Every structure is written in C-alpha cells, then in structure tokens.
Image 1 (tube, rainbow, N blue to C red):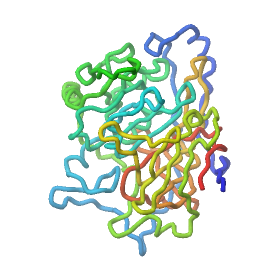
Image 2: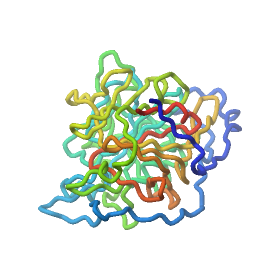
Image 3: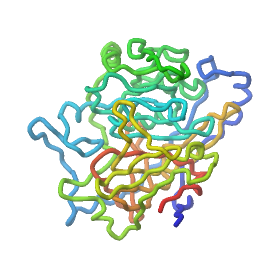
Image 4: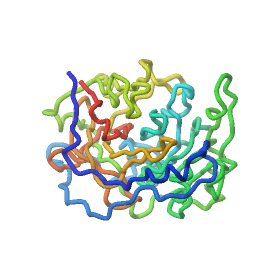
Length: 393
C-alpha cells in the first residue's frame, strides 16, 4: 500500500526568492571561483508555541544524564559511551552520495546522518560523528551548501568540508559563530590544510579522492582555538527511550511500515529520484537497513551495510536559486515530519525557532515530542514540493 503525507498540515518557513542572482552568476563554471556574496536564507523571528513534555507515565525516557563508571548516555544516540566522547562536540563532515563516489569510508561511525538534495538533483550526506577516536580518516569529503551548515550549527558540531558554493556559503561559513575545518580553497579565510589529503583510488575522479584525516583535524582545531565542550545553551536533538523501554511500546496504535522510500520508487527531480534509496526495517534487531540503486549501501571500512535505529523525513520548502541549479531549503521555522522508529510511523511536524545554535525538534500530531529508540538516526531532508513521491508500506 502506498502512503503519502500531505504538505498542508502546518505552515512552513517562507524563503526569499533568489532567482535574480542567476544573472550575476552567469558564466561561472566552478564552485571555487570568485562570486557575488548573497544572503542565503532569512531566519524567522517568530516564537514557537508551548509544547507539552513527553509523557513518561508507564514509559521510561532518558532525562537527567549521569556518569556511571566513566560513561554517559550520548545526547546523539542515547547509548552509553565514554564520558569524554559524550561531552565533546561532534564533527559534521560533508560526504558525496552519488554512484561514482561509492563506497564511502567511515559512515557507519556516524551517530546522525543528514541527507539533502543538491544541484544535479542528487543527494549529499553530512555525517555527524562524536566517537571518531578510532577512525583514521573519513570521506571522500565534498563541498558545502548553506543548509548543511545551518543543520551542523544546530548540533553544535565542528563543520568539515572541501569546497563551497561561494555565493551562498562564503559569508556564512566564515562567521565567528561557525567553527569549521575547511580545505584550502578560495572563499575560505582560515583554511585547515593539515586536515585533508588525497587517497589513491584507482578509477575514481579526483574530486572523490579527498579525505578528512582525524589526526590532522585535531591539530587544526587546536591551532584555530576551537572549543570541544558543548556550551550552556546546548539542546540535544532527540529524546530517547531509557533501558527497558522501546519506542514502539508508546506508539503501539500507530500504523506500521517496514519499507521506506524517501523519493518513491520512480524517478523524479526531488533529489532522491536519481538513485532511488530506501530503508528496510528488520524487526529482529530493530534496525533500518539502507539500500541505494537496489544494493546495500556499505561502509568501505569493513563492508558492513549502513543501518540505523530511526529514520526521519523532515519536509522543507525548497527553491532553485540560479542557472547552476544551486538549491535553497528552509531549515528554520517549522514543517511536516514523519519519524520511523521500531517499525512504527509517527506523523507530526518539526519546529526550529530558537536560532542557529539549537536543532529542530520533532512533535507528534498531539503536540508531544516524539520519542526515539536508542541508536543512530538518519534524517532525510524531503523537498516539500516533491513530497508526493514519498512512499512507505
């Protein structure tokens, strides 16, 4: 059975039209060439309505975190990890997701994977990694788009990229409020050359051979004076079940789905239609396994298939900005959302009104914050205007 979510439930963020920029950009063939700086997406000033706290009666959630034998429960996954890892800001790394770049290296180590459309009507990934001490490198690494930067800021992550769409990113990424580890290209004012290098990949284009090396990243962060501790305003992105509980217990009456298609099963121009990715839920381990082009999407480290505990569809208003097909998405304000966890489908909305330094929060149709199963989460930015193609069953 095909299921679709309409886009008229809530009001979404209005965005300033930027088509006038196309005339200024005509004839520019590379994202690393000098461009006119244009303000990207205005941040709304309206305040979010009060929303009830999650119901806890008969259902346990993680509330106050405490240190037990040197470990704490992660703000990003809810899982017990070393205290130093949990209290350290993560890194957010830009990763290509098109077939010529596959397989990627290190994605299975991410706590959150954020996926969104880019020009060419494909998707790109931003992996949010908190436990990176055992990694030598991650990549290949690709260029920045402003909506990814805004998402990384909401996680208080140190943002890592190689290249940028200068008209829409240069002013933003060089702000004092954005702590970034960026390869040395035009448009980056404080490059971190020591953090990046190329890996020989026979048969791959040069653009898919650049990697972020963890030792070099740490050296660069120290040189640039970046702080690794979350600040006092930090807001965890999700609320997780506690040990002994499962989210599907709370949502027992919700509809079920084991197959999830962010772009449907047919080609379309919404970003997910090029490679037709999907997730398959396995009840035996409570995980959603990722496929792309009808084959498992794997991590080059060990050949394991990417799998997560939660999948989120975050519907965002999108526009085409210019002749280069650069896209804009509203990631502040509010919009429709679907959360898939424990085989259940929870419809609702996302809200983000408290500025760049806080993440979107997800609420069900009763206005209560949605509870996530412990583990990794994959967030798909769904281009709202192509939301009709979403399927699950």
